[in-house]
Length: 69
Image 1: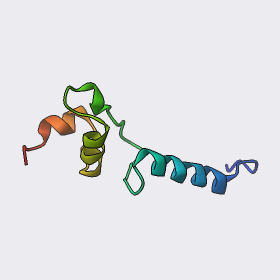
Image 2: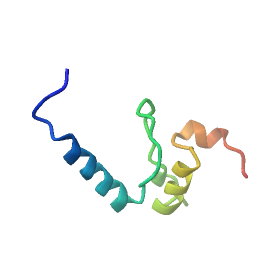
Image 3: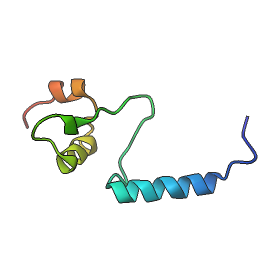
Image 4: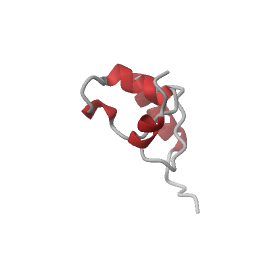
């Protein structure tokens, strides 16, 4: 059931603004996977974390399974 009081265009605009500000605009999130925080790992900062997410590596398990290339 759709909530008639929700401004979906406003929600989409806020999400787009947040994605733009966080450097994640255009990245794909499938909604069924939790995204791990790679910045807690020594040597991985926000920039490298974004590169991993863009490559489709969003979990610690995915990082462990990834090849060095």
